[in-house]
Image (cartoon, rainbow, N blue to C red; front, side, top):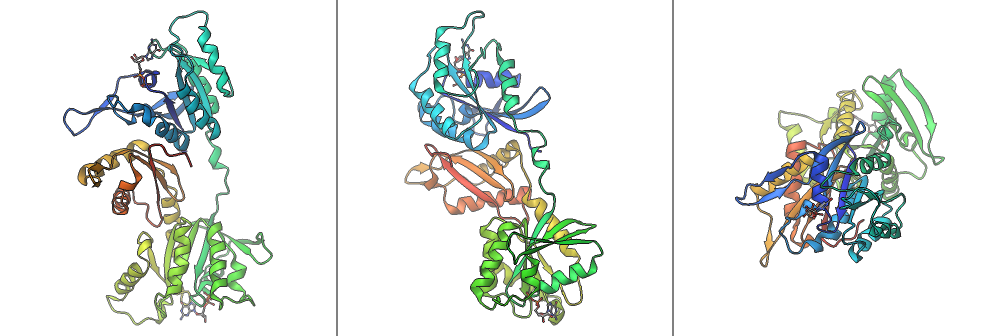
Length: 443
Ligand code: GDP
Ligand code: GDP
């Protein structure tokens, strides 16, 4: 279970960093490699009432000295909306409610973000100042919470409220724990043969369960490697009358299976070699963000020497260049050679597609990457990358916040993706990178 994220947003100077540091319990800063540049650290792990969380100070994304701080407000609110489980929206009782406060509030309310409204700089104990009551106007659920970040008063109430809004600690453990597998590939690649082979060898087949459409039957399989559902096995095993001789139909069928799957097994006929239709079908898995295992079948028919597997691998890598992440397994459904290996491969890419990397580690890798290869510039403007965070698994999805999306050339995205893969793996799975620039509306 990943730690939930709590982001502090608000206008400049309301006291976000002061609160962040207070809650973090220390004054922390990172000195960057460039001499003379000190950047406040913007995330830290904290614990309250036994709940751990990642606290993010969105105000720290740009250096405090930047006069154009105001421009980044919307960017910061967007970061919070996209990445945080709960937002602490901070305001300042001394200035009272301002137009900028309303602007941020609108964004949070529109995104239906769980928000704790915090009114800062309420330093004196006793009756609340009348300005405090203005903040009710914003229309958030729950009371505004008065705090003094410098003194630390009210922060306990604030964290109680935050914790009450966090997602349940074991919320995502209740999902069906079976790995859903789609076996896809062009007609005659050997899909039904491999499924029959796998099922035929197993004593522990549970049952055939009807799928959503009359035609689609899923097969449950439990073995020493885990619990699986093979999707739409009827469509594969019984040769449908509207046969997959019609390419469009077989592609549609593959598409529907892929959508339901956690893992795709892409069958390639070794005898035929890799064809356009294989590329097309593989593309479905890639585009859907599903992890894949490439299975080269009918290996028994191939006359082999030491280089045969490597040469075949090279051909696949060229034809399916967008899928260089997928591992390749050579099998024979007919003889059963290496077919059992398939389960290890399925488990492996499934785990990889569910990897979650902490924001701290990601930004360490990002900073390393930025130091090694400077971001591109164009007509005197240089790409600035502020921050990166993983917002989703399966497929691993990252949001990178930068100054101008247009400067973020594809080649540099590729470079960042390769750095992530080098450090963290993500083998077998596509990864998604979403680029956000200042002023963007949240997705
Ligand atoms: P940020 O721009 O929102 O991160 O704001 P800072 O944390 O940098 O604070 C802006 C100014 O407000 C600083 O001078 C702080 O010392 C001051 N400040 C922050 N919190 C409080 C508070 O609770 N009471 C008072 N009186 N001043 C505060
Ligand atoms: P599907 O259309 O993808 O389901 O392919 P099938 O499983 O029906 O296989 C098509 C043909 O290839 C059948 O005649 C199978 O017997 C044959 N076949 C499948 N796998 C192998 C294999 O590993 N080796 C050999 N020699 N033939 C195979």
